[in-house]
Length: 380
Image (cartoon, rainbow, N blue to C red; front, side, top):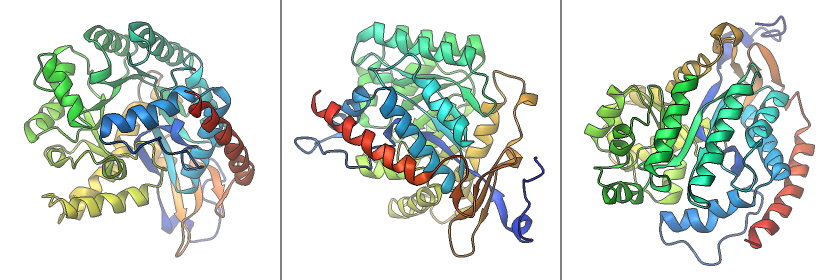
């Protein structure tokens, strides 16, 4: 911890709390709140939401728009007291070098980041998947930023072949890193796996040896209790994303009660984990979750992100090279949001103000890039 770590008024030590971890997000969606135009007609199901909204957005991304998205999303994350993002990235028109754009923004602002490229075949078949895995390989093997780590990513079982799943797992094992993948977010993922001869997407990934221990399964909405127990036995993490699940109308992940390795993510929503926590409480109560009356058990999902982050940061390079997560601290203002935020013992927010960048300038640049991005989307 640096000498300036907790200097301030005398209440800092008493009120400091651990920084929040967003255990699954999409930093590339950072410009979406800045006037992203709606689709020509309202989507009728989850696949249409992907096809007409998010898959059009990610295809339109280029280096400048991704950089603006990353800087805005990460700046606002730090100001909300979120010190670590576990990111799942996709930009099919800009694959090689995309993870460096994200990593550079994190390094600039002083935020911890674990990221990967979500390999998929939905636009360009196997060649597209190979490019995505090549970006994971390039980044994991070359990144030396102390606060940034790389993983191997797959978009979801229903957008990749068996060959791509096997190649992703081989790459992950070569570097000793996990795989980060969406699993059973919607029934469409389950139905696709069944058409391929598997009981579901989890069973498909396990049968293909596609999930090294420590891998991250985002959502798990349509996993039942026995499937969640199987994931737990395999040493896998699950990440619940209440606001996204509600917004996409995909259902409630009741089966997650069977595992204690369940963390909280936002799936591209702003990295305000207090808002996500409130959404989790409301969603659990509304859906009659057996955990709804057990605040301590639900709180574990928020706190589990810290254990997940510690596990991820301990991979690839010697843990001795990584400043301890214990030095990621937030001091809240009385009656307000975070007043002081430390990452690895270094102040990155002071008196509610970002220290490594001008928030208004970041927002102004993001608004300019957003307008350009919406024009690119309209042309697709």
